[in-house]
Length: 91
Image (cartoon, rainbow, N blue to C red; front, side):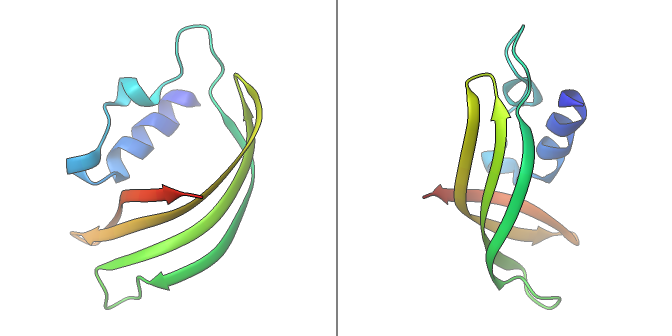
């Protein structure tokens, strides 16, 4: 499951900001984070005729250090018909 998630993230990350698949995998002996809830708070732009957009979300889950909450405004760009994560601001 962790390998599949790392592969998916690497494939959908903008190339100029993309970490290696190995950087996305948990350290040896650690559990991969498991997301249990996602709330999309706002979507700006990113319509069918646009090439950029932002998504504000809150994700909740658990990982090696216990439960966590991630609140981020993420920027995406469409390349060759595929939405790619560019970067984000953690709130």
